Amino acid sequence: AFKPSQVILREVYVKEGKTGKAIRKFVGWKTNKDESGKYPKYVLYFTDFSAGRKEPLQSDIYIVPSEDDMKAKLAVLIEENVKKGWNKAN
Image 1 (cartoon, rainbow, N blue to C red):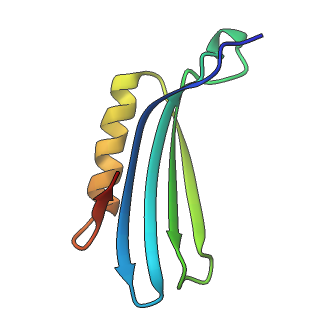
Image 2 (cartoon, rainbow, N blue to C red; image 1 turned 180 degrees about the vertical axis):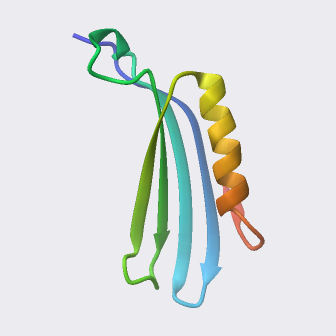
């Protein structure tokens, strides 16, 4: 049996829109299952929800080799996707 995955980072941003709240969430974790050869060591998941869109829920998953690479990818994703009007949620 593997050790449980461990969430390393989680950031959520919210924006009020005409059609309701929009949410962008980033979650990164260490799988603790990479020794199996079947799973990556680190995963970064990006979820983008906007009620007014034709396809309200969109997501992307990124496989990264290290925690530092995950933080660097997160910085790029935030720069590209979190613009004016977005507020960080707790």
